[in-house]
Length: 134
Image (cartoon, rainbow, N blue to C red):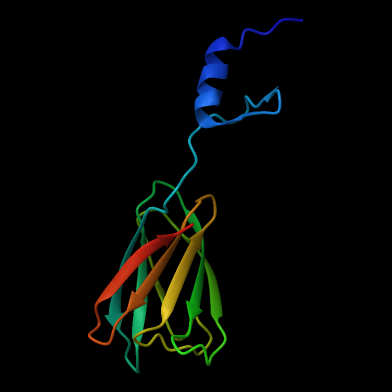
C-alpha cells in the first residue's frame, strides 16, 4: 500500500506535527495563540468595576474568568460563560458570587482552544492593562 503524502508531509512538518515517525494528517492548521477578545470596563453601581468582554471571533467562545485578589486574602472566584460572536459579556459582583472587582485585583480569562490566557489588572486611577500568559 502506497500513500502520496509529500505535499501534506511538508505542510505538517511546518506545523510540527511529524512525531516519532508517525505523520499526523488530521490537523495541519496553525494553533490558535491569543484569544480574539476586546476588554473594557465600567464603574459598578455599588463598588468596584464591571469587566466587559467582547468576542471578536466569527464563532462563539467558551471562556473561564478567574478573579484573583490583590492582597491574596480572598480566595479566587471563577465564572464560566459562552460568548457568542460579536457579543459582550459583563462580569461583576453577581457573576463572581459576591466578589467586587477592586483596583489591583487581577482577572485571568482562559478561552478553550487558545494557547495563551489574557490577564487584566486595574490600578488605583482606573487604568487597566492586559498581558498574555503562556
